Amino acid sequence: MEHTSVGVAAHGDLTRESLEAFIALHGEGSISADARRDAFARYEELSPMRSPQSRYWKHDYAKLGSLGPLPSVMERTYDAIHPGGVTITSFHHARVQHPDIFEQALGKALGGIDDPFTALAFAFQNTGRFIHVPAGVVVDHPITLNLEATERFPYTLVVLGEGAQATIIEEIAGTSTGPNTMFGICELVLGDGAQLTYASLQQIGDSDRIFMTRRARCGTQAHVRWAIAELGGALARTTLRSTLDHMGANADITAVFLCDGRRHIDLSTDVDHTVGSTQSHTLVKSAAVNHGQGRYYGNITIRADARGAQASLRDDTLLLSKDAHIDTIPALEIASNDVKAFHGATVGSIDPEELFYIVSRGIPRPQAERMITLGFFEPALERFPGNALRERIRATLETKLG
Amino acid sequence: MANFLRTARQSVRPGDLPPAQFRKLVFEKLDALDMDTGFLGRYVNDGFSGGEKKRLEMLQLAILAPKYAILDETDSGLDVDALAAVGASLAALRSSEDGKNTGFLIITHYPRILRHIKADAVHIMMGGRIVESGAADLAERIEREGYAAFGSVNGTIESDIEVAGGTH
Image (tube, rainbow over all chains, first blue to last red; front, side, top):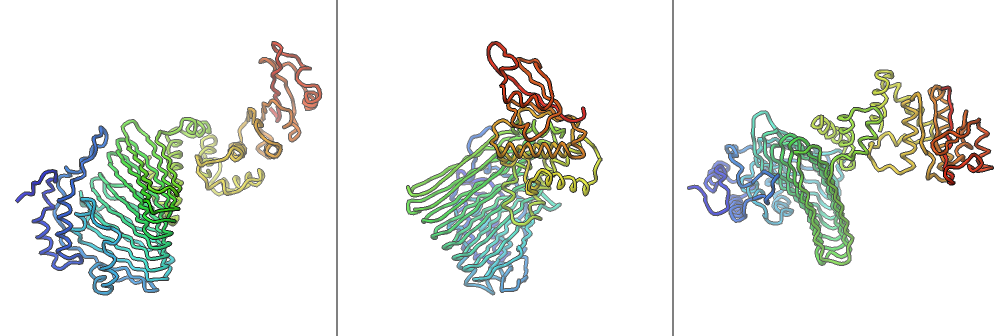
């Protein structure tokens, strides 16, 4: 029976029936059947992402069209254990080897499902990666994760014990078989005093789609650093939220995205300061060229009890062609007096004086524009961990701006 | 910055220096101009201060090695120390190998810069005309007697000194 309640999209492939079939195939998976059913119920409750009226933003999320067949279960298993007791494994093994940590952490940063795509990702979760860094352990080389668009419903759960430190670099790649639609969750749970840098380079195929939910929750004095590069996909939508509900917690959010070709990139970042002495710094650099379309929502919430909180939000957009478009919507909601909040945003095209400066040195105009655009992203790229990663992002940007 | 300098030089003199030699050149010039190698890593539209921009101009001058360099009011708004630095840079540029083949035309309102660099010729321009030409000592006369000694335009004194140097 087709699900037809008002406002719910006709995603023919993801219905209650297909969920039951998926559960039957999966058996008792890493997420219980009941939890999946609850999540799907949430999906049905939440209205689909109908984009606000905009002449430019042409994606109506309610009309995604075919999402392709559901994957057969693909629980990737790794048992790569780094020295020091760091665990990198599948959800399946995590439930067996670290049941308490796993059960406690799963959903902790999500804090309930408030987004229909998060609900879908949770309900149909098929591959799970669990990373646990025990208390006091400092991991000196970055941990790399490779996600592929064919995984469809990946879930990454990272748990850092007290005082643990790690850097994780995630890469999401497309495959030659497409188009694929991914619904993913990336959850970071930081214990007191923990420090985690989580970087992601998203380069799925030009006809793939991705809906990513990223959430972090910080313990006392914990510090999370996000560095996100959204460079691929026909449609890439990410919601990223950091919850600072313990004293002294800190979040740095850096993101870059380039809407080239006919890409649609939709990013929203959120920081929730619920208690005092918390800090956050958000920096987003975006550009659009050709017929690229982008949208950025930058939100900072400082609640009444968050005395002494400090937050900054900086977002800059560069428009490089007349058909390119980016909506940028910053929002600060501040309910406490004793705070420091800063916000700055710029939208524009290349400064003609800057361009003249470079062209007058004998450099051809298209090359000068490229130099300026790469320079534009640079302050954000500096915050990505490791030169190798930065160079790769630069190389991709350069190719797209070519 | 390094990339920008290299590309700019390539545009003017295609293929003249292989990468290793170019790097050597850049470091040489940085040293001659008493500049930090840190500049090279920064992007062309990074937030450079006024003083830093000036020094980068000097560096570009050094690397691009033009036939003629026209410095139009390069000393305006500079304090004593900054002026001395610019003067020293110009002197260093002028005496370098490339600099010996460069003609420098320095346009300024103030003779001060000539304390740091010796001119081959000095011209005073008033109302769009050159009213007096001479050697370096002309600048000293201006300092002693002021521009009024050389004439006026509609009762106002507004003049430029043009200082020429080099072999052209």
